[in-house]
Image (cartoon, rainbow, N blue to C red; front, side, top):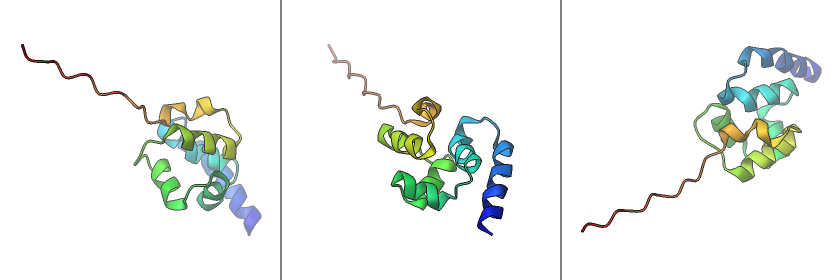
Length: 95
């Protein structure tokens, strides 16, 4: 049963295409991993991983590093998903 699930996940991966929002799910499925197993390997919770895969939240740099290591991929593949920390522009003073 486990081998069949692994094979089924691998077959689903190409259907996700190359959309950046699907890259974590696609990479996970290409490796035949369940969300639960990737969560364990990366130190995340399965619900958190589901939100990332569903595009419901951006990820912090540290999370991208953990996912890249767990998926054994270059960090650059996950860079588009990383939440950019942009400083607030200074408030102009009134004269």
